[in-house]
Image (cartoon, rainbow, N blue to C red; front, top):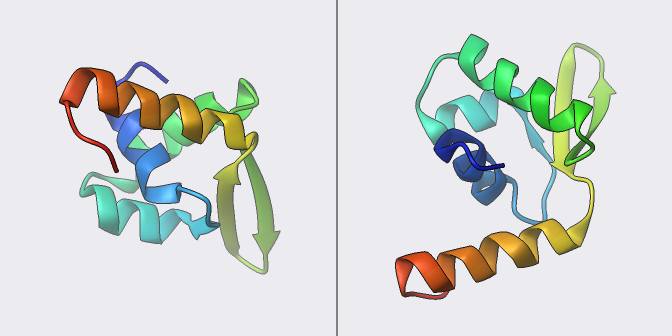
Length: 81
């Protein structure tokens, strides 16, 4: 989770379920780059997936993860979500 792109992905996901393409559009980098980071977070249990036809949807696996991200934002950025 310490990589800045992974933190952006977590912020995009929030409490919702988002397709890979929507994550790519929101973060603004290549799909292959996003997919590599998503795979790492999925392997570590940070994210969960659901496949619907040819689309893969991601969501945060444990809601406490979002609490951690929010606390980090408060501490390191000086503002709340």
